[in-house]
Image (cartoon, rainbow, N blue to C red; front, side):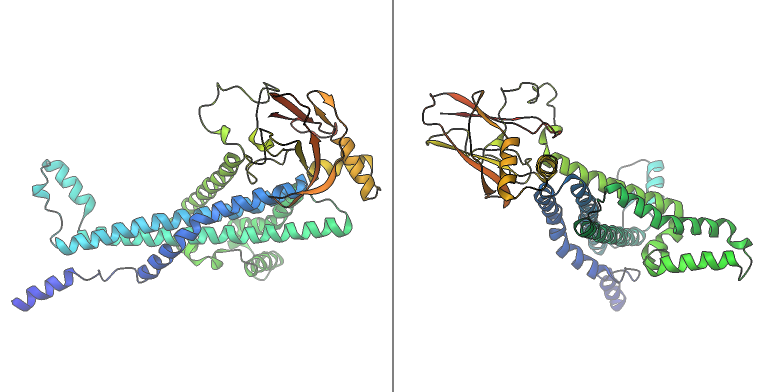
Length: 421
């Protein structure tokens, strides 16, 4: 009798036999990787915000595609590992509580009515069943998150390869590649596979064995399977689809992808313009008040080099020395068009003069002769025009430098930089 009681107590401290055999590896991966995945989205923001101003608009939009897919994959992994850790913690808590109370829930001592007691006890079942459900759900969340992130990662690699190829073609052959080309390229790549799947699903049973239609369909499906498409390349997703329904799995996958893409794009929009989020509808718009606005991006000691747009800036809002250092960043999408239109075949010195004429400078409403030198934004390592403006004779108080935008550029307009002596 004593041996039987000892065996029963010992079994209460053991994991159930149906426990997923990979639970220890799952916990190890989630515990180690969750911190890296939580840092990865912010790192991707930093990279895309630093690289975007270096390219003309069409290349920046292609870079945006790579960023969008990469950050979506990172967000899915980060959320997956966090949720998996919480679900595994709940499972461990249930196992621990079951070892303390091996008889399970004492429904008669909960103080609820007979109908509620019957409903709740039927829904919960045996404690071992609840433990097994918690175990299985944690594993499914882990598997689904890793599979979906892997799919997005492969898409990211594909888009990055296309971006590199398009850049090489543009650089060596002068053929401009637009984002629409990439979208159409992906559509054309997917179209044969989608058509073959549709034909096989609707007419596969009616095809003549060994006939031309069957051979063509099989060739298309086999070819796409070799490059990574098809259920055989995603066994975990195939198992989920077969046991939980194909339509349900597709809807869940699509929903997760859309939420990840929405979160990735929204976070970048917020990083570029924090005023988009919040109850600021009644606050005056800086673009509407004209000269009565102060933009931190126009001051080197206050600007955010990653989130602010590349606009002209000076060293500080309060000038205590004899000179104001004015820096006008070179913006490829703006200045390349200017140079192509005004001095396409000019040498370096003439090109510098073209840029100087395009960005006229005035002080307190009066044009001033400045001579731009070729320089660099010291904090971003991007090319810029640099000049010094003598302000020793200015009176104390508020003054304003205006840098004219070229008339061919569809931007926010002239840059107005107020400062104080």
